[in-house]
Amino acid sequence: MKKFFKALSVCSLAAAMTVGASATAFAAGINAAEQKILDELNTTVTMAGTEKSLPVVYINQAENYLNTVEITDAEADEIIKRIETVKSYLTSTGAAKYDDLTDAQIDEFFALCQDVVSVINLKIAYNKATRVVTIVDSTGAVIFTCQIGNPGYNPGGSEDPGKTDPGKTDPTIDPNPIIKTGFDFNIPGVTAVAGLGILLVSAAGVYFIRTKKKAEDNA
Amino acid sequence: MHKTHRSRKKSLYGKDMIILPIVFCVLIFLICLVVIIPSTASFQSTASLFFSDREKNFSNDYVNIFVPVEESYDESETSAESSQTSKAEPKKQETVNIANFTFPAYGNQFGELIIEDCQIHAKLFFGYDDIALRNGVCIYSGSFIPGYGKTILVAGHNNTYFNGLKYAQKGQIVKIRTNYGNYKYEITDMQIHDENDRSAYDLKADSENLIMYTCYPFDELGLTPNRYFVYAKLISGPVIDKKA
Image (tube, rainbow over all chains, first blue to last red; front, side, top):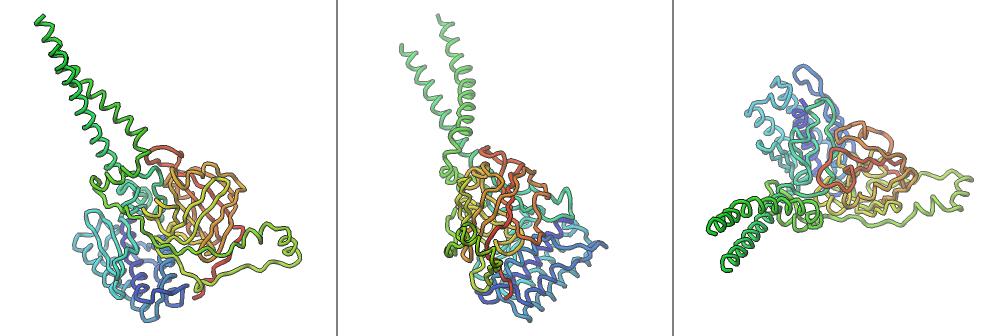
């Protein structure tokens, strides 16, 4: 359920961002149109007979993004209309969680999301293998990314994708915003470098022993 | 004599040639892991460019919108003259209209965070990001910026910019300078929580509160399941007028 809502959150956020990105780059505050979008994001969707709401962190992110753009009433109305379409589709699938969706339903779901964001030239990319969802603006700049099932996902960072999945323990709570802030190094990289070091040291050791043996043999 | 020579040869190609190198390698590996690696971050970064199976951003390019505004909190909060003035006449809450400054976008550096008692002086970014964490501390984009009247959740690495949080004490002052105003917070508490403990923060709060966190224990190599949280309350700084 958590993953499902994660995806829904992404789409809703995408919708908000879509509307925002079509506007002028300089804008500030939450106008009435933007507030309508935030209100829409605060509504619930019926999933397998249960009313579910979006995690507050995604609504917060939408609010922060909307503070950077300017949205008109017409744009907001279109976005809201398309978000409703996405919600209706999710309800119609009968799925209770993301993993319940078939591949075809997932494709349709993200196609509908793309419809939402395409209003203002945003694009959604979804990698089925990694479950990473990325939204980029018309310049190609990433404005949002997350990993379904891994709310704490930090793209390319010191995260441990796949390990952090609070949704496994409680699907009704918000995504975990706490990231890994320990010593920042890439474990595969370190392992590879260490392995290379070992190889060199081993070669040096073998060379040393052979040299010693030759010296002994000559003696 | 011949037997002794064969025995030595066997030893060279058996015990000496296999066991000793393995032991040697293990020792070197441990030395690398414990001693050398922590001091070779740049080398690791370079190496991981070639060996990592995950996309990683090694760029140091980021947008800096931070233009310090005139210091006002120190004078207004600490001077005796100001104190006397405030007794005579209630101080009007300072505000800053959201239309009058550039709202930070994801990845922007828009300020700096200073805790003098903890020897912390870090650039402040909006949004979790590799570049941000490498160059300073960052506000979670699902929380809010200073002055917004809600929760500000700030993360930083425990071996760099937030290493000084281990010196945090109640009553210490946290200064946040931004491109729209200067803020002062007072540390109220320090707590250790599991990384998945949601009682450590409240992102729905309707009152301004600053939460800084980093991995715990401090100075420990690798990733840890615990976080060290430092909580602070707002003392001064302009309230953001959100009306567009």
